[in-house]
Image (cartoon, rainbow, N blue to C red):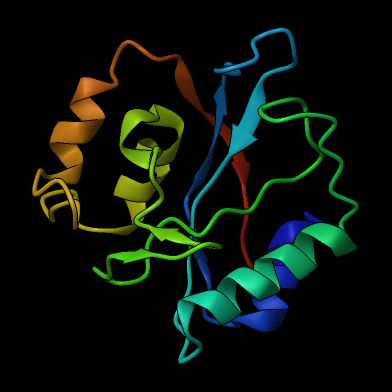
Length: 147
């Protein structure tokens, strides 16, 4: 997948979760989404990471006809260590991630699920359990370094 290649080119040590298929949430009249989480190591600040993610979206032809509508790609910065940040361009942790199983399932593959959400002081596993009713299934597709 092009996304994995661009992330690996920018951050060579990137690790990827499994890929999950989920039902669209806010605007449901669209195809299912495919979701994954990437864990990167960087010395760049969160704003610079976000800027690079936006550049990658543009390079991949992101097309978003309206908020929560169908899109070709969507890269979000979910966490930056345990940093809490709120600016005009970036909120960390991502403000809705704790409500979305399609984020929490792959996230818990890459981090210790017993660690706590930096704002909510609740473990990632507990937050995942609270989203159990949301449809989210692991599929066989994996994002990884090509040999």
